[in-house]
Amino acid sequence: MVDKALSYINEHSMLKSGEKVLVALSGGPDSVCLIHILYNLQEKLNIQCFAAHLNHCLRGEEADKDEAYSEELCRRLNIPFFSKRVDINALAAKRGISVEMAGREARYEFFDEIKNKYQIHKIAVAHNANDQAETILMRFMRGTGSEGLRGIKPIREGIFIRPILCLSREEIEEYCRINNLNPRIDKTNLEDIYYRNKIRLQLLPYIEENFNSNIISTLNRLAYLIDSDNDYIQEQVDINYNIFCNANEEGLLIHKDAFKLHKAILSRLIRKAYNEFSGIHSNFQKVHVDDIIFLQKQGTGRSINLPGGICAENRYYDIYFFKKDSKGELVFNEKYIIENINDIKSKLYEGFNIYLQDFRLNLNIKRLELKPSLNLKTNNTTKYFDLDKIKGSILLRNRKAGDRFSPLGMKGSKKLKDLFIDLKVPQDKRNDIPLLCFDDDIAWIIGYNISDKYKVDKNTKNILQIKLESEAFFE
Image 1 (tube, one colour):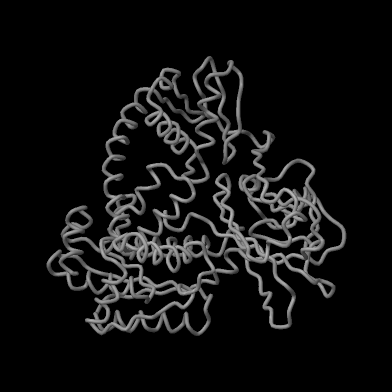
Image 2 (cartoon, rainbow, N blue to C red):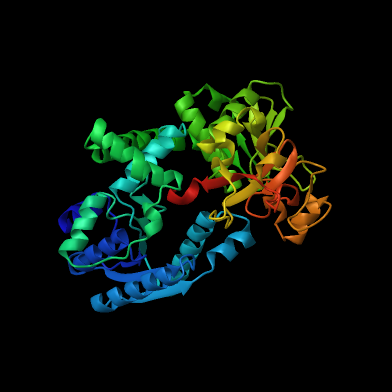
């Protein structure tokens, strides 16, 4: 397995002689296998290993044991070790994002601190072949294009490398057993409460047993083939971007002749233009690409709103991107989740998932009966509501003018704009915060608070549990 990882590292030119490599070490089997393999390759590759461990403070004593294990392992291997503790729940609330996303941001900020201080060249993370397969299946079921089916890339931004992406989870566990590494096990990975965990624990084993016993390697092979094809397409996109796109500080123009290109090239060119101009690399979906292509066929002067406060305008059949000022119209999305909850209340006991592409969120909705044993502990991604207080539709949308909200524990309501000011939400972030609404009444400001109107109280008999999961973790 060391030789297999070495071959993969060399195939993708991940490391150069003399480089310093920082390993993201959680203490679990994947990262422990990764650091041990790189430790064994230090002399052959002429590299120097470092390790970074972030304690998320989410699992109490178990998290502390993960940190202690990681430190002791690095002491035995004589690898410099860095650790940091961050209250991820508090960070998620402060930034108005999910706990998962807050954890990811905290980790990469910590890695960046060490990288800058110790002149680190590469940061190694421990994604494996199973992670790749899970990612491809998850994206496939959400309707991704070929770009998404490339899966997890071996190298990102020329800095982040994944040396054991070629190893299966079974191979990793065998490596840890043979080398008596005894890694830590995060029990939450064994619970099928998250979308990815359900794919890992239910869907993939079912496919292996009933359809293809080598599904992990098959999906990894698919990712490799699509990656090769996409590299060629991206080369053509880059060539045409330089021909048809012009940018300055005020805006970016896509020349009308670009819209004669094959749609496989055009759609990627539009996405590249948006990413380059806005600096945003998420929340820009196929629907936005299609809207821009349609806009180009309309009359001059027509415009549409895009995520991140960007406007696209038809200027004599050229498309011009520019940033709206603070007085510009709101970027508005609205998606119904349930048209009429009274029609399906009896079916909610089984629960269901819905993926909202415009918001890049997966929602799990389920009905619960109030019992003494029921644990109603909430966090930024799980909330509970009194089901019998909900009379009509459930939808997700962005804010709009005149919105009011009744924060938990407050009688009456206040303007959503004033609440965002109180919460110190940056102005450029406010339009992108999803709002879960019952009819058109805001019930949950995602990442922040729920409404007092729909809280669970002493008179509650039936509970609606809503969990959400963001897509961004494996990018």
